[in-house]
Amino acid sequence: MNGKKHRITFIVPAYNEENNIRRFHEETNKTLRGLNNYTCEFVFIDDGSNDSTWQVIKETSNLDSAVKGLRLSRNFGKEMALTAGIIEWTKFSDAVIFMDADLQHPPSVIPKLIQQWELGFQIVTAQRKFIRYPIWREMGSNFFFFMLNRFSKLDIQHKATDFRLLDRKVLEVLQTFPERNRFFRGIIDWMGFKKASITFDSPDRITGKSTFSFNNLFNLAVNSFTSFSLMPLRITGYLGLAVTTASSLLFLYMIITHLVLGLTLFTKLAYFVVFNTLLFGIVLAALGLIALYIGNIHTEVSGRPLYIVQERVGFVDSNLI
Ligand code: UDP
Ligand code: MG
Image (cartoon, rainbow, N blue to C red; front, side, top):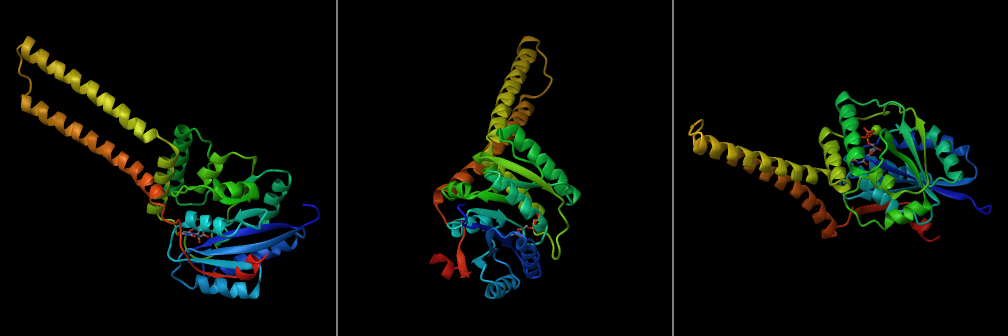
């Protein structure tokens, strides 16, 4: 940009990553040394870790002024950690790159992301070539993306990761989103803009365990589904219609066999009980779904902050720019 160096911010959510932060910082810096035309900085977001992650972030920040840290007051989840990174720290950046702290997003891919950005793409996503996750997670993820793409009219890339570069323009828009139940990949694909994607080979995490449990992922899936598609509600509608049709037909059959043909195949009470149970079940299912939506609306409306920052490091001087 007119001879001025572009500024790129790496946003790195970290939950119990005490053993990975330093390695991540070193490895990434090795790659960045080859990129002379950019000013790079790191924002580590300690997402309420129980280990010494924050301590390590502070130490790293003391040694390298390009390292900043944000400490959330509790574990808000990766999506919120990323949101915190964007909102707190993108005023001065020309682009942001999201990366995991466990080196599963290899730094060697960074130049490729930047290259695409220089070509004019405002969102550059990185897709995994292979998924090295447990089979339940792989199957669940396949099913989730299949359903989401089918029913939400969105083309959300499967195997896309959160490893991505976002241009300043995209960030500015993203910051204005009041939405609270965030599913970043969904929102970003929904936004449009000029997009490119590259592929990379995802290694295993260096130390520690993946913190995404079945529960976490299931909740993320349900949340993203209800915020991006009305499909479940529609299915309930169809179900209601089917049940009404079936029950009126059965009712008709009962009347005909009993009144016209004079047969007593089942007691009236049996029919009554079966119907009632069935209808009751349907009503409950519908209520369950409605509850999901109301839950989403509730969190949107309540206006609670998305995250709470407990401490910061390395931010002071940069904010004076
Ligand atoms: N993470 C986070 N908050 C959480 C869970 C994870 O900030 O509640 C971070 C984690 O430290 C890592 C990234 O999100 O940098 C990806 O997490 P993980 O490696 O556990 O997920 P996976 O690679 O299995 O998708
Ligand atoms: Mg990982």
